[in-house]
Length: 447
Image 1 (cartoon, rainbow, N blue to C red):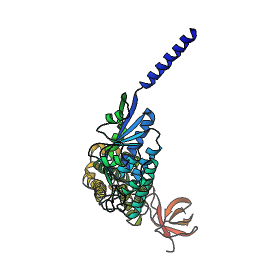
Image 2: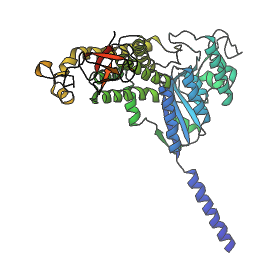
Image 3: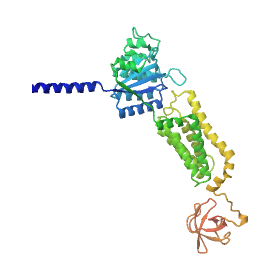
Image 4: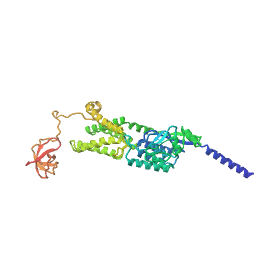
């Protein structure tokens, strides 16, 4: 009797645990890919998967509607999806073309809404024409490898890229393969036609679930604002204006601080989104250094000035483009035009403001507080010379080598001196030809 009570007690406990386990709510995380596949999309997916790692959902669903984008960004997303252990489903709401098809094939299950399609993965360049064969070959191999990884027919995946591939009963040569919903189901590239995520859950026998839609945080939203070409143009204006005013009034501090902040706000968003490369930022810094050298060290406008302008302006433009070093195959003409226009508008806008508004700014009370505006005129008794007696015509000896500056000794006193550009050896007899400033201008006595 006692044994039966214990047995009954254990059965009750087991039943309770089973019910509790069965009733546990399924957590579903949803993220969206509903724009062109580019570095911003790749970053969005990275952030979404990081969020999934924190929240630990049971299922991840991607809502898909895209005509594609850049191959290398899609490849990065595919690698992230294939490496992730949590089951990932894709719900194609309308289109999964080109890079979108590749990402869909990387998912564990594909579901499609009525009227949607998947395929047409031929690689195209910026003007919409087919890219060279080396890019098609890369896309074919990527599609094939991804299909093999997820248990789908690799030949069909490859036919979505190459119009020359013919598969009996599936596609004929001369047409890039694109599946409708029914065709995708028949060929193993779609599990079922559904109209919502709820229907996906129903097909898996899951009735108790919660949906957590991933949204980028406030910081990411702010970063997105600074990717706007108009905002980028304003930041460029501040960068150029700040550097100019700091060079005109060294030591003020405020202009260069404003320029530095604008640089951070300009470069960091593009860098985080994978568009600004390290070499592009380094090129900008080198360009600025060259311009400073041209202004302060090498007067005139020569190779350093021209090189500095090219590096500075060129890097500002390249940062806004999704180029691969100097390969612009997948960059559209519109994107290039917008980048060039934004950079030129920012730079020349700053020049115009400095030209027309610079004088007025120097007359404001604020500027008078941060800059010394008083002029010490010679007719008011001011002089740049520290000497108390006239030194012109005085003779002496070069105490050190003058090339062109150095030390001289006159009547037992040591003075700073410089030549007209020539070289004077130590011990040479010299004569003073000018005593304005803090150094004496000299020449050899026998010259």
